[in-house]
Amino acid sequence: MPSESLRLKESHPTPSRKKSSDDGGSGGIIVFFVFIFLIVFPTATFAFFMKTIYNQPQSATGGSFIVETGEGGVVIATHLYEQKFVSNATVFKVYLWVSGLGEKLQAGLYQLPVRASMVDIAHILSSGKVQKNEVRVTIPEGSSSVRIADILASDGVMQKEDFLQLATVSDTRTLLPDAYYNFFQDKPADQGLEGYFFPDTYFFYRDSESSLILKKFLDTFQKRAGDLLASAQANGKNIHEVLTLASIVEAEAQRKEDKRLVAGIFLKRLEIGMPLQSDATVNFVTGKSALQPTSEDLAQDSLYNTYQHVGLPPGPINNPGLESIEAVLQPELSDYLYFIALPDVGVIYAKTFEEHKQNKEKYL
Figure (cartoon, rainbow, N blue to C red):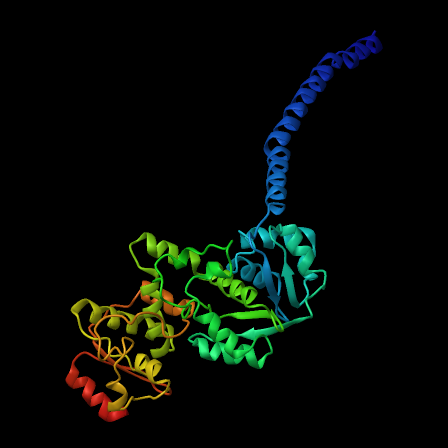
């Protein structure tokens, strides 16, 4: 009897073990579906979304792109975004990391095709298939068309006279009938292209055709400053006037903070009807680079002589960089009305004409 009683007690818990097993099974199914819903599905959706972005066409124009020695994926992604070859630098960085191509990018000059995707660009920059038949040319900020002509001629890109002729073109559609650039909307019909050759580093083939050189300059201008100027125009700014004043600021000031202050001074002078009195515009007329123009220089009768004529000159006196353009659009307002620009000292400011005369006696 005791043994039978013991056997009954041992066999009695069997139903409860089965119930526990059923509960665990249903709980496991719930956990599985929760995992799918919260982890797998969003991850798969995100992966599909990213893959779609990676393969979307990016640049509408294509063009040359430089990877400098020592540049890593982060810097390269930033430069690609700044030059509008990719729409999002962070997404491109993620692709470099996911694909493992970030460690394989190679220095050199590459030709990126029109509508290349991020995948295409990453593989091109890691292929090592660099361009070898082009000349690297750097155009400094504030270069005049004459200086650009000298640079291009010295590098064998085109004859000086040919570029100077190109700079006088008033309607670029005669050379580029299918190209449209919104920054030309405010340019007077009789004005050439001074101010529209964007300062940057370029790669040109030797003995290039004028139309190809012009297109590369204008495409770069559109990429680097087109959106900024379009936004300014939407806010009532005249693009040609912005570039004209930016070219004067470029010639007068070197540092970013000085450019904004000088731009503010010139805008104040325009507002109160005072002549700009920029020595840089006089030098443009005389062809000199004098720190202080002579009385004879200041007497030159030209619409570009801002000592003789109130308001802006007819057009830019050089080709300004992005900082000078931004300075005109976002000037630093101050109590200053006068300044002296000195190459080694910087810009010396004055609030009154008497203070300005003292500065001239001291520094000039």
